[in-house]
Picture 1 (spheres, rainbow over the protein chains, first blue to last red):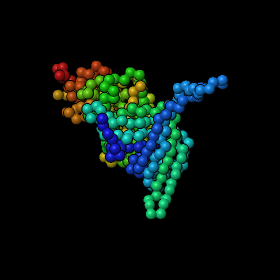
Picture 2: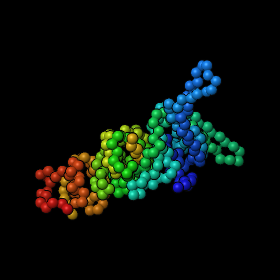
Picture 3: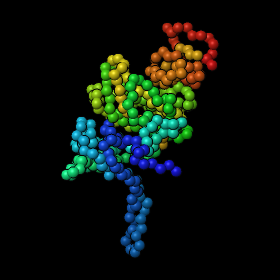
Length: 262
Length: 60
């Protein structure tokens, strides 16, 4: 078996906030609470199998950081609305021979609690809790690791072979952009592509919403979950990032993409 | 060996062994070993008349 440690930790993002370098601990849990079905007139309790599986990410601790795109900024407002979350505890590398890093992902993360603490003789710390609604994809695979990239390009040389076969029943694909620098560019489209053979050309499958400076200015980011645009997806996948407008040279974007098939 | 084709869909492909990205409508040169499958999938088509004449030999 493979054993993983904190040195293997890939990244944790909520919304477009990259919390990796300011986090020191995470705890998550999956549960399916039983339903008490004991009727009147019996002396022994009975239960029914739980109807709902729940996922919680409760014990995230880290350093207090007041910079603009920090854990503090991510949590202090406890803004209403769901964010995407991507948790990659087992690495952040490009797929090797088709094998991609494991990611836990969902699009229904609600920020519920944030705590700051300061102790004499210690560094200020912060912790937060989130609640998760809806599907939590436990076996999402990283197509494109969370790294900074420059001019228009593709990850097709380091393809993902998600399940060793094509997908036929749909699925979801997750994007997080944690930092962007536009230079003179005016839009960016990130697209999941697929291909039936490892050495073939890769064709657009599911495109994320076009990113523009008006809503995602330099220094910020975005996140999005998309249902696969076609239930059928070829065995091998890659990601392209395509800039438009202005001129090439100064643009950079730090993003990750992960996919799961149903 | 490469030849000129028109991308019908967004595409990533190899040209002279290097990965490139094309949008639908772009005129591209694609390495011969990717041509057959790309044509079959409808990802590319032969370039229109405005492009330089294509060689007649079949890409291998």
